[in-house]
Image (cartoon, rainbow, N blue to C red; front, side, top):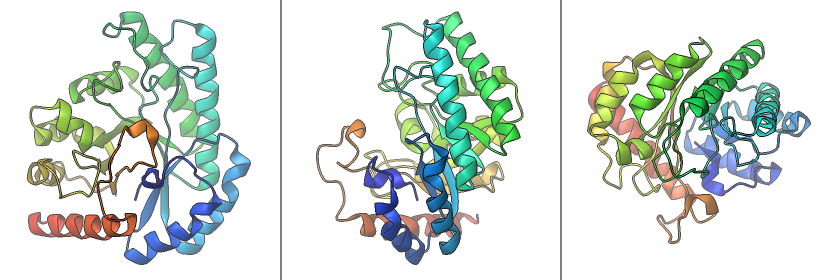
Length: 275
């Protein structure tokens, strides 16, 4: 379960929520890392260990931490902050750092990515992959839809990017929400990515309860089976508590109901298709 459902205040006030997540039947959580101080995550590791919850981490970059900025100092700042985020993930006990941090969220030039921007992104992620490998953290890069990102906004572009990085510690994190906007066929996108996929987020077209919207779930689960994916499946859902998601109306009854219904939907879908 992705903790962004409860917004960006990721601190010990969420510990009772972790209890509920474990009680409902989830086996792990995605923890957003917005505080790049490794000392802040020792308590989280202890709590997750007590609950027996697996954990992975996510992050994204803003305009002052942009690996494809024309300003070399901003690119350097991005790499420094991402390395510190990797350090946080290691303290947390995670094995993956995921997200669209190859460039900055919501920062646009009004043009497609240039050759220089692509090169800066590839170079920065390659350096980060080297650093993260020594920390036992795998990179899982994500593409976002065209309204949120422009370096990679579809599966083919992200495949190209990861292949250009050409590092065994750099893989893909796949998100059905963005695929539902940008792909002609979600299942084909998953199959094209194949064993590059290290993690899968299941997210409905309106960011609410998986299975309650119009994502091609049958096609997605069939493709997950076709590529013999045996990694984690995670629910990523958002509410009005996450301003960056631009959600202005209530999409579900409660976080608890969303989790119970979403988990049941995933289990039923996997069982039905033989995953």
